Image (cartoon, rainbow, N blue to C red; front, top):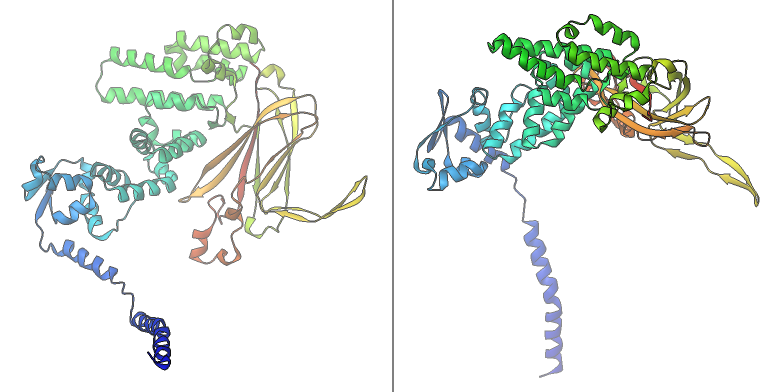
Length: 505
């Protein structure tokens, strides 16, 4: 073969990849991505609204809902089994009768519409029946929507008497995120919950579980006792409504009083408060139960721990001599910072206060003085110089983006082991409440007089990026406010500092 011919073939072969690449680029330039998903969704929605080509009717209560087997099977594992497996009696039926609770019947049309549109309106009143339907028919995406809603609207549930039903259902079904949030809301806002009609629905076992918690927030133990007396009165009313005879009511009430009073921390009541209980109607009815608890309280208040130790042997009984998170002046002080969004960076607010070293009356003269420094806008460590044996060492300026609280034991007199609790208030749905509690147990001594808590609140919550800050006059601004801000203009930072002794008893 002539050399010129071979050379021409080589040139053609060398151009082949380039030609292929040019053809591919041309084909790609002709491609466009089409997103017609919204039109498809509109088509499905029209199928539901116009009842076109429906092949099954679902009867719920006194209403019938026309639907499509394909959509039902694609959306729900239960409907898929019901309509496609011969072992189910409904698989060949054109009309299916479903038995639902009355509250679920009223929202079934919303539930069914979700299959076609992926949209649903959730409120604090309908979330429970919708969640029940989503669980029953295994619509997992809708279950997650309901759980997410409930996590963000616990305060709404409390203010609309839904809290107990939310707690009961989520505890039974294992939705721990919601159940824990409900329990925390009750513990940290117990007095407000006790003043709602929903309080009467609390079961004895659940109430006792809450009363055994040391992080239950209440003004003092006598206030908690009065809340429980009100709950007991509501239980008696409920028994009357069930038309039980007096003997049955007395028997059930005696059992309930005996169980609940074991959870009240009588040693945390002052001698005056214990003495006032002698006039309580509850004492007249159940003196054999009450007098023993009151006697134990007086032993603690008078420092008779050796005598008390003979009776309190179990862990639950010893907890009765441990303070809760009491918001009375004896252990607590409040820090309120105004106009938080406009506070300069690295600003510090200082609070000086004192607390009692003991919950017992005979040690009421023992006090500790504390200094709290709160840094809501971060901490700045200025440049400084350290003198070391090699010479002078320059330490550069350093900034830490954190919401810091520093607690210092001011006048130190011996070792002191304390439980330090920081109550963080917030606003949800226009309701101010305690949103979070941060606790630390610290052993204050001469070498360690300061407790530092960083990230008290997520830094971004109080210090959003500049582009997210809006003027007070805009509607968008009210929605962008941190949930940890309170007050009429949502610009106040409110916290409680509670310092209680860790008893050696």
